[in-house]
Image 1 (cartoon, helix red, strand yellow):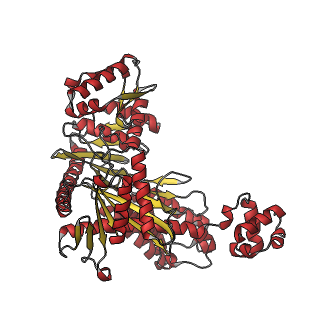
Image 2 (tube, one colour; image 1 turned 90 degrees about the horizontal axis):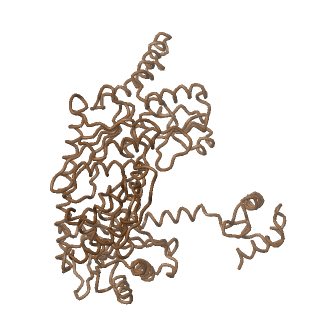
Image 3 (tube, rainbow, N blue to C red; image 1 turned 90 degrees about the vertical axis):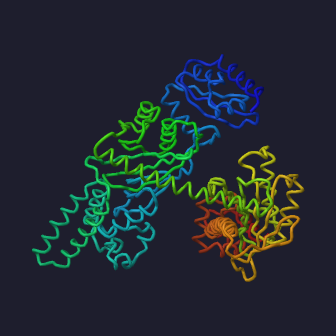
Length: 615
């Protein structure tokens, strides 16, 4: 960071500040390539932006940012609340390097009660919401599966799809193992099934003890009527509910719908642990490790974490935190405006809620210690990789490539990315092979390299950027290695990369892999070498991702109708053709005169369909 570049950046900022209004809004700082360096919000843009021109008062991180700034962009908003919501959305989308970033922000699973069917279906759900009632979020798919299993055991609700439900002629296995009441074949009335569904809803909204009491009364009534089989069924339901309640190791009086957030810091890293409580039940927890600089204050980290975390997610009525976020009133106002109801953020200092915060903080401490231990192991392995392949420095980004196809069909290339923090799944890419000949593995690899590095050259990605790889690991033998080297030399990027190919050993034995590296004879590693195991793990992850991408294409191909590719043949005509001939295969074999017999098909269309299948 030179004094000249720092002064230049400060002058750029001062120039923009002169023209800015005293209004709330969002500002972006850009480098010479147009990449966003930082996104910030302000109550008054002019006052906030001008502070960056006083560079001697800034921390080192912001000095580096100012030194790289060559231009700025601005959006004015009606309020600071709107600016906060826009800022968090843009940070998640743009991932600016000088912002505090929330990593691994995956969607959470919910339980969905389908309300558009006489017999509500209960299922796991992720993504955009449609019709129905949603319960959650749950911290993991395992927690959802466990709860759905409970709903089936206690309330005997169906979890099958509507098409499966409509096609049943006799009860399925779920009925025979007492997990469903078989409404598909009339074993239960719509009214009685509705009673079970309402009891399940009551359980998910926190009234489990009322449900348990109702089951107890029904059990006693059945026993008095000498219906001991039915009484035993209610007894088993009561036991299942009691078992669930006994597993709730955290019970806070008055706590209904809330998120509990606590942090722990060590060695310049922060873990933010969040527990989800819905209807008084613990729906699980998840740990996050936001990206930030060592000098960032914990209040700023928590404030940025919460703004990004709740962007696109429902906010519960109550949030408890271990430390006061730097913008607590603004967060409360923004969340309340977003949800259309009052949101309360508190920092408990005594009683049961403080003990709950301490419990979550202990979990954060344990998670961070595990994370640091894993990072230490990853660092040692990366150093081992650098030494093995005679690299000048420890690789920060490793890209691993593999191809997948069956007899040349649905050909897919895959790239996975690994770094010091583990797999970077957000950087994974798949390549649908378009030009290589069928079953030409070398041609497939060539196409993948051309597209990967052609895009990098077009986008002018710097060799010092975190998006530029230090090491390419190719799943293949000497042929794939030579192909990749040839392409990279043609593109002029060979000098900037270390390329290694890893081939499976004789009889595909793990542990007997051969490595191919420029200027070195093929070699193997000892069977128990930890670096070998690490490289195998990378190779296997690329293989898994490639196969998954191939299967997705193959599944789409299976359900694809060739009539979809014929211009001018819409849904009505496709339906008429299939109804007349019975299958796409029969349509393919039909002549023009046969096609003309289908209602709505003109001669021109019949000739077009015939030509499509026969030319």
